[in-house]
Image 1 (cartoon, helix red, strand yellow):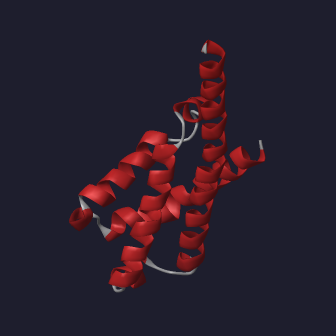
Image 2 (cartoon, rainbow, N blue to C red; image 1 turned 60 degrees about the horizontal axis):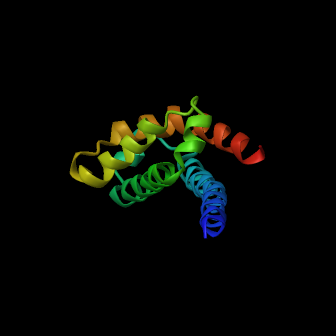
Length: 126
């Protein structure tokens, strides 16, 4: 009986590692969508397009949700990535959706997404 329990625990642990890869892939896909859509844009064009702003906020939320769902083991083994900040951005968008400012989202797009993309691509190649 104990052997079956240990096998089940090992299976669940391995399954979570597999899910980490999928979550990283979701993060990478969302980042690529945001970067592709905002290439050549200005903050003014984002300010004037509420639908685009909502879409970018949505994909930013996906990045945060996927980060939140990564295993603690994975996040602890990759401490150079600001996991808590990424998750905090997701919480801010979801729970304070009327308080999300264009300049805040634009700052994330302009300064944080490309370095995060580079890190995630590296993690996926490990």
